[in-house]
Length: 233
Image 1 (cartoon, one colour):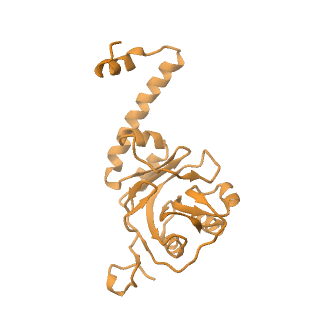
Image 2 (cartoon, rainbow, N blue to C red; image 1 turned 120 degrees about the horizontal axis):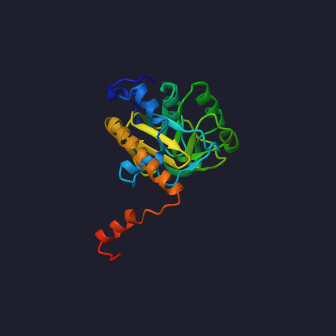
């Protein structure tokens, strides 16, 4: 299947959009030093994936790259393979598998392909298999669960379409950031502004940490908050 914009010739339920991202390499590189928690804090604190596990067993292995999105029928990975074939080094494959845990949609052989093609990682609202292989690292992977049951390769599915994944709405080309705390999606159009806020937030946390290390308790920081809410302190 080739990627094009004429939907009339595609069978029902199948579609592959071209890869899309407006993120520059320098912007992505700048985010590699940003903790997921900082990005979440400056985006309102209540955003990010829910219910996913980290399977690469390497707390230092982080994920940062543009999203190549996949919507697939639960238990089928035909379009995941299609997405991997079209992805560029550093791209993160984000899979809407409907949260299904009955059948894996990626496995260890796909891990070797991802490493050789230098893909940025996987985020799966669904299951994987070959847990021991993924635990070796080499590529970050987050999934809702795991099972030995292997996938079909029949479709249908779509590549590079808007998806929902583990509580996140994700557009193709959004920035996907992942570390030991979890995964967050940063809209591509907001990435520059969010990065600037993350730098300010990091400086604020550094000042608080330095103060904490002295043993000094900044009571006013919280007392002012309590008084604002009517608590007499």
